[in-house]
Image (cartoon, rainbow, N blue to C red; front, side, top):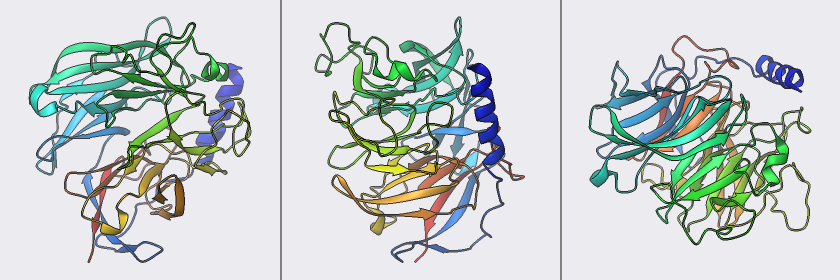
Length: 378
């Protein structure tokens, strides 16, 4: 099995394409519907797999790099030295230092949460809370630990929801059977209090032979997590890669308490009673790696739209939502910047994204990896 995994991912690595230099400075792009025009600006370059974003009060941007560095763009400029280096990170394969999230009351408590992989008799993932003192991270407190991981399918997004709870996506660690087991946390969405304790109203709290942290079941490798203005949780998820099922089958899901999203019982457009079908499905694969629901004022036509970056698909997908349905979708910047990972709305109302061309599966441009942003053009 290990050899099959290796060759499957080697094939993917060799087939993902290169990273063109992008648009000429000042070039303007229009949406297919003509309801938005923008240019792309570079925020920071020369990075190494920027994975997660967190905007501080005042607009400075904290971000993670997979090898274990937390860095900052302050007053529009990249600080040369990292804010923090995670001491026990294990960055092989798809994991390493992944997501970063601010506590909803960050302005008062200065709490920052990091999700990352480490070694402990095998690869594991944990979420650790720190206090940011303005220069570095201090006072580490483990929020959840010992999540089984592997070189691939490690997840992990950690984001606070509208209810103030911390949600964590956990991959299946390349063991597909784990996603349906209720006594393990792999292949699940978790819901936690900000200190790592379990909310008593979780859907499986108090149920025999089920972990109380579980919010939803049957996920393969979800890497995007966002909420609509109406409070619906949206996740983007990677489908099978050939070794564990037919290629493709990437998903966008509306994820709700206690529901089962099917992996590995169903995938792609298969259906089965009691299992939730995806809102959107992509075959061939696009490898969705992020999610944001735009709420800003910079792009009025984008209000309430879902955006997510694609690694293998090398584009940003915009989906126009109407409640629980998708009215339309289109590709933005297709083939312009290579592999696109994180996507987030800044406090300035602009859309920020990162490239992931130095992750071993792309062909980096000379200034990759980069953080960039979409700026409206009137």
